[in-house]
Image (cartoon, rainbow, N blue to C red; front, side, top):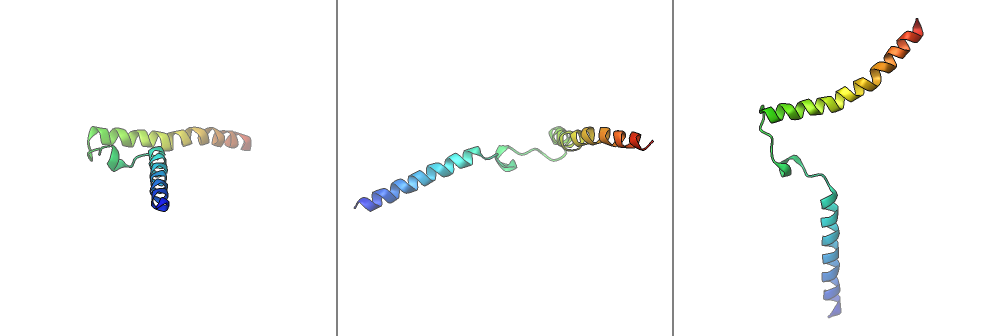
Length: 73
């Protein structure tokens, strides 16, 4: 009779652990609310993504290219 109670508590502990792990994850796009395609919010999100992905990389690499180019001459 003690084993079913232990199994139940183990299941509850496992369930709590899974809930804790899931609470640490970033929710997917469908969970936060959708951005309508071609709306101003869509273009704002794309602009922000482009700035973060390309803009920061370009700012880091371009000065290195200029230094390398100046070293050749």
